[in-house]
Each structure stands twice: as structure tokens, then as C-alpha cells.
Amino acid sequence: KVNTLNRPDGKKKAYVRLAPDYDALDVANKIGII
Image: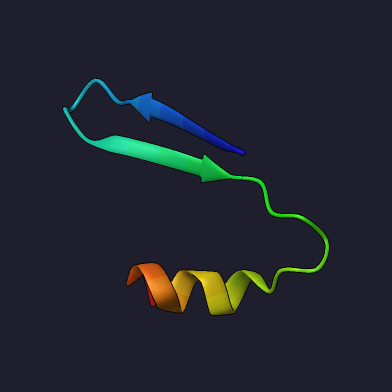
């Protein structure tokens, strides 16, 4: 599940809820955050 939020300074934030069998660090690596 992904929720997006547009901040007042024009940036967009996304909150991602992962299923228990996903590793958050692995997902972050794949989408380029880390």
C-alpha cells in the first residue's frame, strides 16, 4: 500500500506499507533511496 502526500514546500512524500515477507532495506535499495 502506498500513500502519497504533497508537502507545502512542493515536495512529494510517499509512505509505503510492506507485507511482512518484504525486507524494507531491500525495497529501498531497489527504488534508489539508499
